[in-house]
Length: 145
Ligand SMILES: Nc1ncnc2c1ncn2[C@@H]1O[C@H](COP(=O)(O)OP(=O)(O)OP(=O)(O)O)[C@@H](O)[C@H]1O
Ligand SMILES: [Mg+2]
Image (cartoon, rainbow, N blue to C red; front, side, top):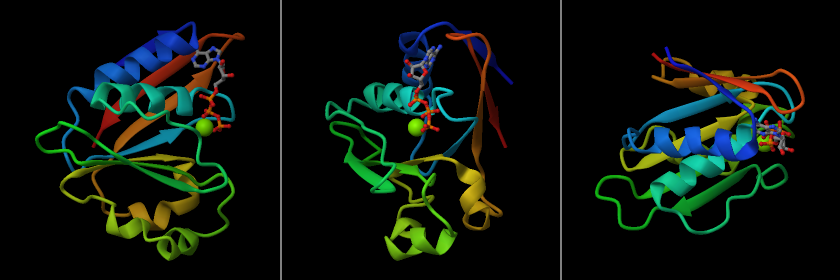
């Protein structure tokens, strides 16, 4: 399982961008780690790697953002979820999240997956764990089920 140590937002973003190259439609990525650990920075990198030119911002209040993936053969949509302000997984069902989860032409990425564990049961996941060290040091571990 690869582990990376980064020293800037840019480096964290670059790891995400690299990972995007090997993603396949239907992949579900969960991002674990504390506030400010770099989960959104990493997500921006994945979006960039998928060729999304629209700026990716944290969906802390909207909970879910859906981006079109242009010019990709098998991946059509990128769904970014941040459950930080979610109380129960049912809120995600209300906004139609389960239509995207695991969909064959969609990549889903979830910040704070602990809140919606119930929706992720029995799913194959890519688990990405962030740990903050010194001010700018981040350790990123990528594990595939
Ligand atoms: N090596 C690094 N990688 C990523 N971010 C870094 C790094 N060093 C410092 N930072 C800073 O840490 C913060 C990371 O913010 P980011 O929004 O990506 O975190 P997050 O894990 O998504 O937080 P939240 O849980 O609030 O959504 C930014 O302010 C960024 O400038
Ligand atoms: Mg975030």
